[in-house]
Length: 324
Ligand code: AMP
Ligand code: FES
Ligand code: ZN
Ligand code: ZN
Image: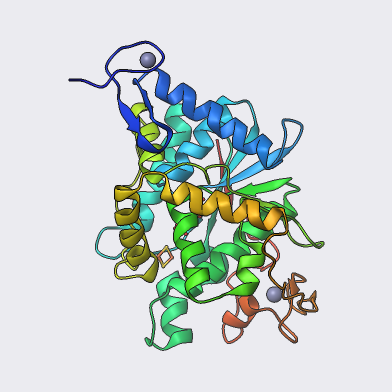
């Protein structure tokens, strides 16, 4: 027997076992947009008088997030960072193409800021990684550092109230699980839907999709006809977070709602002071080269990456081009 939409009784497009809620192809996207708004308010992420920068990777989560924020009437610009990853599938080219078409075909008035790492700093992610890691490791850590730096820089310098990323519940739970497994106390003190701009130089970071399962963001993208890149980054294969996600999926399968309870329960217990983690309040100073706050002596970890290489362009002006 077909499962029916709770709102209209038509055939359901998705069943969310953890909420015991089934919705059709018309009512599901409505619900999804309303829930995003609730999350934004619940965690006081930003309001309609503020400008938001959405980091878009070309994937389903971040493009859906930008779509929802624009539908809700927020002043949301996009930021795409060109990493220069090929991996035999033209990964970065394809990702950029999805972001560009999202703007031209769906939201022609929207503004997409593009920062291409090679054009601005002289090397692609695999190139910096090969030079600095000497082939010992995957480029993911270097890539993460560079992405975080550029996102923060563009959001802060551009005067945005917040930087929004497409992290979903599955992402957050995998990170939380990893932080617990390794007792990363400093991370446990800070992980959450909002990371306040604690000091000048840092932008506020927000995750409006943190209460959605990955299958829910995928369903939204599908039902809204958003064209996104299906491939994962070619370097992601075999990562610890993917292994955690597989184990957590088994728990969720047997006990629907496990992930949501684990995550929201953690946030609540911390908020209410039932659990407390020491914060690593390192002394920060301005990087001697770029001025960003850093705990590293002298220059920051980002600038250190490029130390032996003169940047192709001024580090102070990462914004390359704006489309839309
Ligand atoms: P990931 O770390 O790849 O799981 O991505 C997490 C979030 O970071 C995405 O949902 C995006 O918001 C953002 N992001 C990842 N890659 C890029 C990129 N190349 N450009 C801009 N934002 C990105
Ligand atoms: Fe950065 Fe995969 S996205 S290494
Ligand atoms: Zn319906
Ligand atoms: Zn620096």
